[in-house]
Image 1 (cartoon, helix red, strand yellow):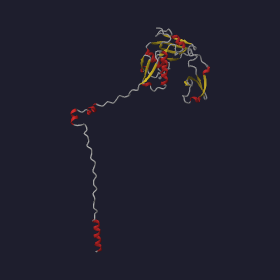
Image 2 (cartoon, one colour):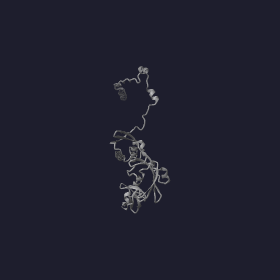
Image 3 (cartoon, one colour):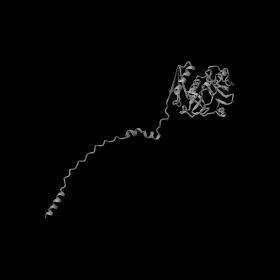
Image 4 (cartoon, helix red, strand yellow):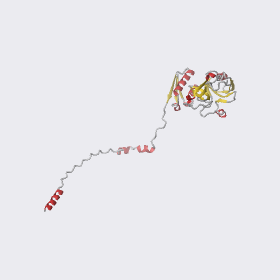
Length: 290
């Protein structure tokens, strides 16, 4: 079935620059490795788009309309239909000191500066030339493109919209529950502490309410589960705790201890003063007097 604007698609492509023949982008892992553009932090696979939303260059989207899934097509785009012509007004010279909190700039490096993506063109004595033009602006682009799949299932569409905004977590880990016009999205633990999660939730909500008019309310549910199972008592402990009825009747498990009677204080014995010393001294004195 030929695709039309508004369709949810998974698209495969490889992009080359006509002037140099250089491969600069692809959805295939093997092609990325062969072209030396593979990165470990990149995810390869069919790209999710909604045809006509401008998520691909305008000229490429126009060439996909009417294409059947599984059909390969080569599309050449002029700069006007690709990423536009280069604009000299988008070049800036900024002081090098403004990069103190960032990685030291090098020519060709892609950076985010003043909240916008840019490319470092040159580094001089205390100044950096920053280019806000798209890296492929002014280039003629050649796409080898094919439609991998047309998404018809609503849950598939929703999960792909979530993955678009929260790409760090596999979309299969999100659980969906829909009741009439209310949608609940159960967020997996891997996403709880992602930077910018609240902003991503807002973007997901806006996308869902835009492309699914029947959804009025979107709720995100975060469930914290016990990480370790409860400890179980070993069988020996359980057996030692079991008491037969006969034993229980014959003798209590722990006999109450008799209260100790307060210790009696020993009566202080009244000793009579000894008179032996005085008598002896008196006798000795009487002998000296003799």
